[in-house]
Image (cartoon, rainbow, N blue to C red):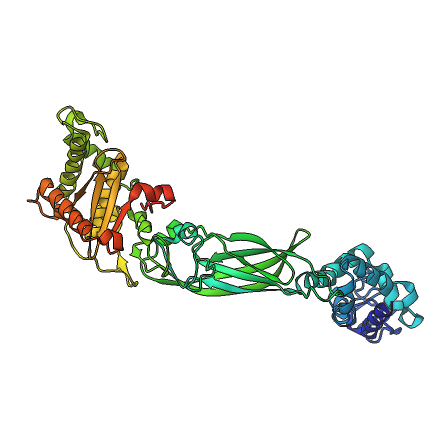
Length: 494
């Protein structure tokens, strides 16, 4: 118990730092403890001072209501200073911190440790609400000990983070970067990961060394709610925690030019239903508008699949387009992969539907123009609903528009991208390997016919295939339906 004797000695040595009813004064001249209610300010009867004659109502009287008040902060600081010195090493060998603290408290404040010259301090402690004082000291000191002991072997740091977040793909990142590897072939989670280490020395038998359950809480200021992920850090090992963020689409849609924000990171040890913080950090990032086809990280698998976020079958105005289609098709009905009575095959009926879509969009007067960008690197790509509203679009934008309508109808659209150009296709029959292709930009020419656009699209595809460009990756063939099965979801913006 020599440790606790030292703690007590320290506490008593600085008892004058506490706001107690008495320490060692007996005349009241210093305004601390007069037995008859003197407060060092007013006369003996307290008529003009803060203390009553018998001290019942005085701040400092022995019998006053506040006489038993103890300055817990000062008292706790003495204990804390001693604990972090001599007692700290004993906690290595005693994992039951509550037991250590109870022994400390009982011994420090037992009558055996109080001598007559400090009777006033003892009286104050006896008059105090023991349970209340104990709890206050526990809150102030015990938690310090317990928390520090729980996290003393723990540390963490940001392992990976994404400097540029593209709104078009933000909610696709959990799938987009699943099992993503860095250039060294090691896991490289995105958009953020934290490495947590349990640095305890397994070779030191005097130091308790055990596994730790840890929790990462993180958010991107202004764009996500808090994402949480837990893991286990075994002794002398590390674990990488990578959260899945859920971005607020309204916040992403409000971004019209690149905006700076931050990842916020907090890491906790989980001990007995407590979350004990041991790492806090922030890391800057930039969020780009949802219209930017951003340059995602090199080595990303199946990069072309993610562009189908622009294919939006549930967009506004789709109902109006479907109504217009009914007016153009036999019997006022839209048949998808079914044969109209006037046709000789389902393929011919599919072309009939494609022709109706072409003519409806051609009638909208959609021009082929270059957009102005949004100040971000990479290409700006407006969504189909924006193309319909502005009545202009790039080849990739009109391709997405056709694909969106086809998908809404239940057809199976294909997106073709070749160097500097894009166009659309559709399977002639359900799951058919025979595909028709259409040059979508020809809707900008009011004199162009569907047959001309169809012939041009088919010729362009055949030329790319013959050149082997789909095999080498120079050109891409994207089956929209397959990307949906894979998990790519449309950005259905209002």
